[in-house]
Image (cartoon, rainbow, N blue to C red; front, side):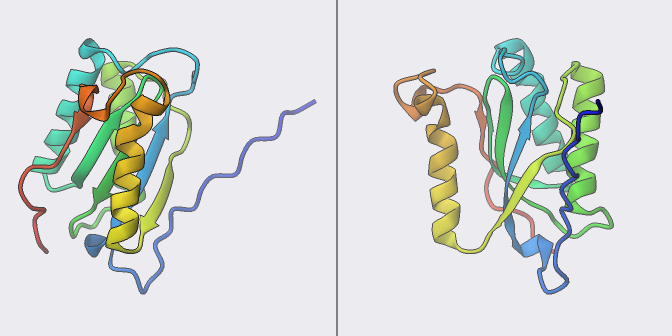
Length: 155
């Protein structure tokens, strides 16, 4: 008997949406959701370096990027580019899988945040994730988080 596979997520941005003016809540999961593959200094440091590198290359703007043991959460914007959001995220996943030996799930979750209130709520949700999982007692204790520096670049 063949096991059914989940359909791929479309990640298509509607034509009326300007991706460079939006903020997206993105979650990328490891294939194995039962072990700590990411939240160690040896793994988190180079992983955060890849986030900062892509920021400096203007591939994305990481408002917030948080590493959990088996997944990452991010609030990202995407500056003008010939590359789609999907291409940028999948290339990052491909590179980190190859270079850092991370076993990611096939796809990723994204949701466009439509206003400042939902951005603040998602940022709070992301920052409280290690607390909810019992990994720390306050969000400030969690070491595996990256904030974009200064303001994001314009078009």
